[in-house]
Length: 196
Image (cartoon, rainbow, N blue to C red; front, side, top):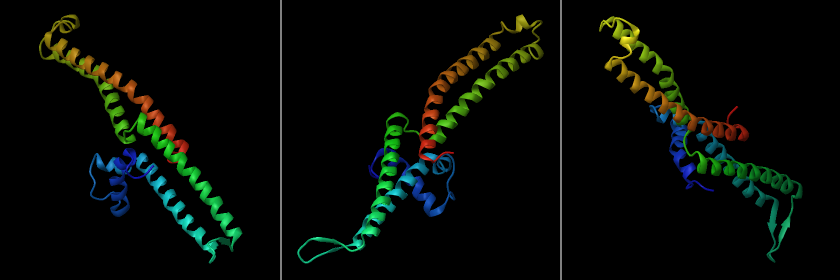
């Protein structure tokens, strides 16, 4: 896996901006994306990859090439320590790559975008009955409906009720599709140590 992988490529501009400038100069939705935990996952992967490459180059300091083309180890303890750390980092990097591969195929979205969609859907679900009741009150107060039953038969009330019930039902369906995605991303990020 490298920087050309779609999951990493989508997050690199935000990571690079964050590393050079912090969060200054960013506005929504870029601001949320730059501080998104999936960007932190890519940063962790990149940091481990850089450290791994640095350690691999340091192994050359523990060996010498003889004039006959053979390799002679002059610091076996140092080489063993470097190789052990390289092995640990490689395993960690491969775990992160597996996580990014899974997320890329199942939920390529930014976590902040999923949460924003969830919050918007929850807001509509919560707001729908209030808007319907508000229209009922409007029918009774301003359009002089004599009873609640008469007000509930008004075309204005029925239009508002239909509109908000449809919006609430669509939001419920969207919420049902978003919640498992958020749970998957949060579980994967927690397992990687990016999300506490």
